[in-house]
Image 1 (tube, rainbow, N blue to C red):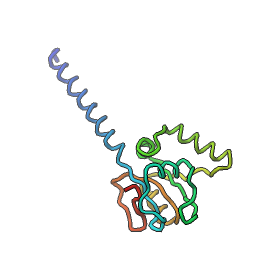
Image 2: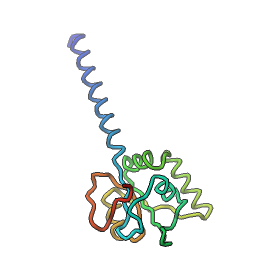
Image 3: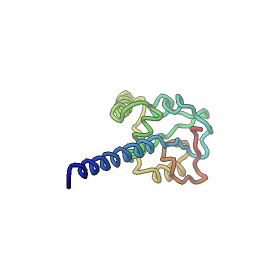
Image 4: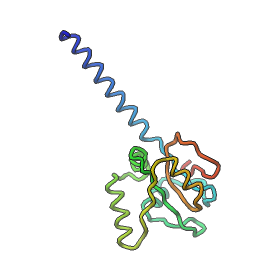
Length: 146
């Protein structure tokens, strides 16, 4: 392969890698907050979502305990942290460890993926979590970050 051919090959490879990075970044923002259909709210603002997931709000308006559920899917979890919490994964873990050791709260339940999160929230009153926006949602859950 001559110099011009190698240059064109490198240019194509660089473009492919760049497109993958752009596509991956686009996916990173597609996360929605869901709650059990019986949760006493239909719409949470960004501040309330952040406070719930950081353990600063632990009860719904009706005094029912909020059960926070996290996704074990790293891409979805990182997208959630970036969009709603504005902290890194390690900073988020440290907040929850501090809550645990000070008696302020218990560790959140972490489930394998979006489907597991949906299944849990469907069957657990007072629960809230996040999933990929592409996840199929049954009537037993509702999107609350409208």
